Length: 378
Image (cartoon, rainbow, N blue to C red; front, side, top):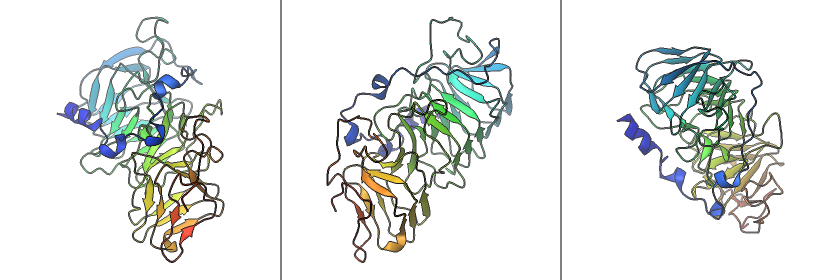
């Protein structure tokens, strides 16, 4: 049954839930993070929205219309095309979420976004749970939206995902396996905020570990703040640099581990470009913290980009033709707060030291890469 499949899916393949040594001493993010800042909508929604409960599989083409708040009471499978109109509010009860097996079109606008939030969130469509001010939303109030490989062409544009991540290790959107496993979807100009997460770099608000091709899995112009880890991708996935990692209304509000979590791997004979400069790329996921080149791939690291590694991590390849690194790119230890900030989220509890990671090996011809490399063994 799909419900069982969801439960099994909560373990995102064994690599994505291994503990991270550099962070094991920390308590959970839910305990350490300050209380989430309440969200005041830029365009407040009406307080008298009609409540429509959704408690069963969507098995025929369906449209959710503006003026309604749709309350998701349990885990719902979307087995037929679903259109969510701009301005729709979707609220989730505890441990509820969506499994997307068919195309979802949630194509909104900046002035009329679509909201996915907690049942306790009175900022959107008012007091839907009817308890006045007795309850307020908090991180992890609901589960997540799981994008199965069976869906094709889903669009989420100008959507806000708030207070989720209560199931599945702190993830609010998951690109998960399924028939085809292509993940031809778009997440554009969306906001991911107030998501519960742990201390592992594999528990990102947006779990994109199954994404393979950035020209197919479109993740652009999104905003991530007040999460544990914002986003997770594979080493061979060149995440677009248009995303941002702070609250646009308060630049000081970022994410606890404010970096792009990268699951280390072989580069799959592709050209991969790292161009994000707001936050570092962090190779610290379940011990898979190295990038290796064994074929014709090319790793491009642009100007001002920072790449951090945890213990035993590094970059290796057969020759210099596999790499194109800007002279201003920085490669350093996860503990190095001087470059890219406190990416391991422990304040000043740890300091970098020589030997924190293995460095960059370009093969026997070029030897070890040394420009702007800090705290490595070489």
